Length: 123
Image (cartoon, rainbow, N blue to C red):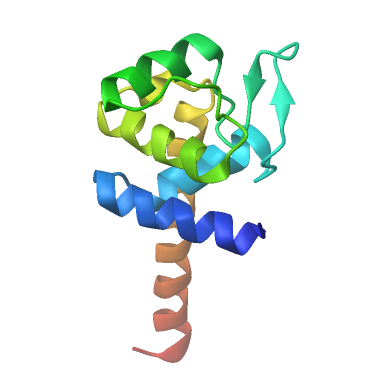
């Protein structure tokens, strides 16, 4: 699966679960750089959103889905991450605050570019 396909799935599931697609995408980037086979934290965290087994099993059970270890399945990893975020549990990711900061900074930079363009354009 390509990075573009991963990003498309993130947007699809983020919208389905009422999560900011930009924030969900940023968390994924910070967690795994969109590497579906990422393994971190001494082998405990797996997949795009770097789920540890306890959180994976807890959230999958809350979703009414199999708790089988499908963390390396990009669709299931994204779906479970969006559910988790939609439940107000985004802070379960150590990158959550940094991702929010990065999104705020990105919005601020975009606003400044628009202001500068208006000023330079004489508008």
